[in-house]
Length: 104
Image (tube, rainbow, N blue to C red; front, top):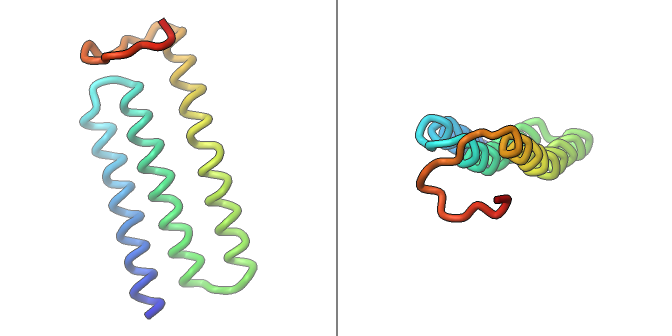
């Protein structure tokens, strides 16, 4: 039963990573690419790390896995926000279909 859960988490993590890669390819500007990759990648990493912890077992492994996931969930969105804000102030163009520019 645990093997099936591990496989499901690995497949979900790989699917989210694939969606992040497709988001980089399909999105029109830097800001939408960063939003897409940040959300999909954090979910993908979370699934992959939890699958590894489930497969390896042990309390130490679970503690490390939860710490890694918490670190990624806390830092990835903040880092993406800081990078996008810096790109905006440097003058990176916004996609012409953008409806709202709150920093303007």
